[in-house]
Length: 50
Ligand SMILES: [Zn+2]
Image 1 (tube, rainbow, N blue to C red):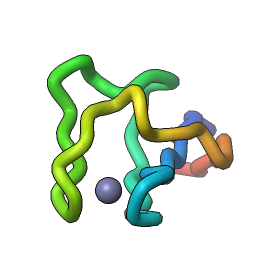
Image 2: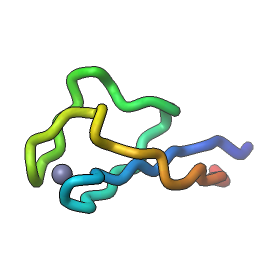
Image 3: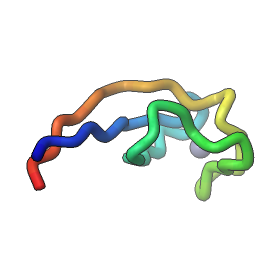
């Protein structure tokens, strides 16, 4: 069964993260530059086959 994942990119440093939810958690912090989720943008929705 296919599920969706969501790729976000930090607009400050370019770090990318892929999660199962369409929004980053409110307490997410970029591990590279330390900014919060408001500075990430959704770049891609990925269909994943299990
Ligand atoms: Zn960053």
